[in-house]
Length: 198
Image (cartoon, rainbow, N blue to C red; front, side, top):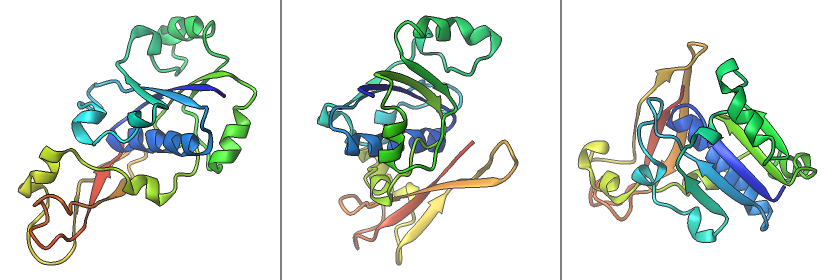
């Protein structure tokens, strides 16, 4: 696989799950190029760059793109077959709701026979090491917001939870170190935030 078009679906946590696992793939294949189609909609009403510092595109292997008709998720519903049909002329393979627990190397081997791959999912493409999650950094306005995390005492935890489709509680943790901002006070404690998933 030389090019992956990834359409992360669902709420923020689901999208991060897909996006960060794609980052794991890039860490194991220097030639892989990833185009992330981040659709701003009712499930996630913010662009990635409005929430997190961009540590993807400087490598040159990631590009973020706005959603177009051609990028409609490949969920094979009757009204979405036409975009998928058109994409079949461009992509060697299309996957809807793809997910795996494979290591990144195994996932790359699975897609090796296809040159251009389109995946729409809110799930992980492969195992994602914790250090990839720890690489997420909220943008400065979020870091500077004292209301985001209490500014007293030891390390703090905060977050939101929502029921997913199976009515189970789901949480997605990523460690965010706010050592440069005042969100955790002046003592420089690290904070953990929990994002809700759908």
